[in-house]
Image (cartoon, rainbow, N blue to C red; front, top):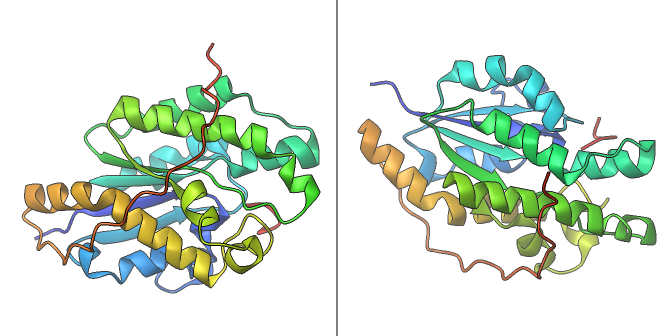
Length: 232
């Protein structure tokens, strides 16, 4: 029996050197999830690429995601849109982010969606100025998840609740070991119902469902505006 496929798409936080890994999983949260009993009945594919923004995902979406015929698609994207605004003057508005993000999600009809909100754990005053821009991308992610019936992983609030940024994401953006462990935990907490539903639909052997993890309560964020490892 063919096992249902989960595709993880995103930037370097998902990539984690997966293209030099013989198993193609990388050394971050995707690998941790692939080894969990909850995903034992699934094929896990890592399709993260360092530096990617939604526009980059859009350009490779057909080959890297749709062609895999996934049962579940998980996406973590948004920090590079914010980063490029401040290091290159290349801004992406909330409206542009929403338009392009929605477009790729609508191209995987039939797949269940898991959207991981982008996150930032500022380690200096410069990164603290990025918060307003990132919060717009978080708001878009939350709005899309609600509108498309996707599972939402509140990574920003969850990771920041752990404590000192230097222990979780030493550069404020890329998680260290503890950060990836927590990101995997948050993903499982958010995606458990989808995993169970897809396993049932495909006749896959369901894994042991992890104990529910209370969702961190995020601070209020603004509504979306209508209308290598050097990069994440």
